[in-house]
Length: 131
Image (tube, rainbow, N blue to C red):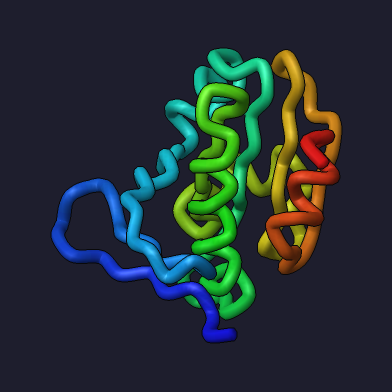
């Protein structure tokens, strides 16, 4: 079975995804957050999932489409965001992020889990209590 294909067709904040059923659908892009809106994002979402990454990180780039799918699957149930740790080093220091990709999971504003390393979507859903 061929792997899923992602394709950006414009500069609009969405991309098209062809999954295992070989059909195309639109996926909204994950929210990009930074030091100035990090705390408000966590406060506004009872469940906040934040992918800490950097552009030079190979596993982070491979995790990107997984995070996009996760965001689509959890729409209305969780806020999913990406945080570039190179550009937001204070957040990386604050949460002791020493390796990327790292997923920070907040429930009601409290950090409840830190997931380090490339993981399949099913593992992330299970860790979040959705499988």
